[in-house]
Image 1 (cartoon, rainbow, N blue to C red):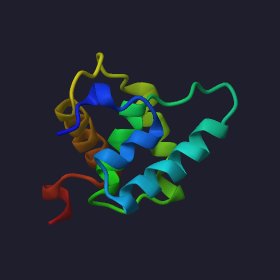
Image 2 (image 1 turned 180 degrees about the horizontal axis):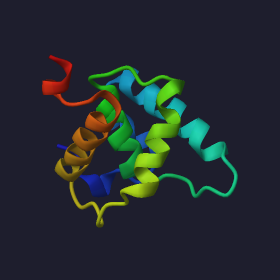
Image 3 (image 1 turned 30 degrees about the vertical axis):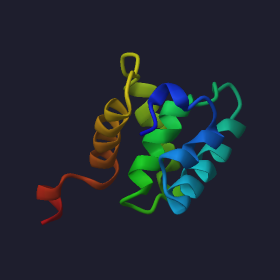
Length: 103
């Protein structure tokens, strides 16, 4: 199993994400990292986006909301992939609502 410490670059996301999820995460990263006056995302943040992309399609309509999420909810230092999973569930709720809201 891959550990979070093993993810040193965006390329390493392929170790834990499916190809479609990695592709969606990379599209978001390309958009985000082109913004001026915005620091580039850490690999763990890219992993969070990819984890959401595993279950939902992330298109350009969500990009600003994802950026706002990371800007407003900077988490304590993320240590494990399980931490990324928890943050991904929070982001998923922000973007798509909870299961109860969808029913």
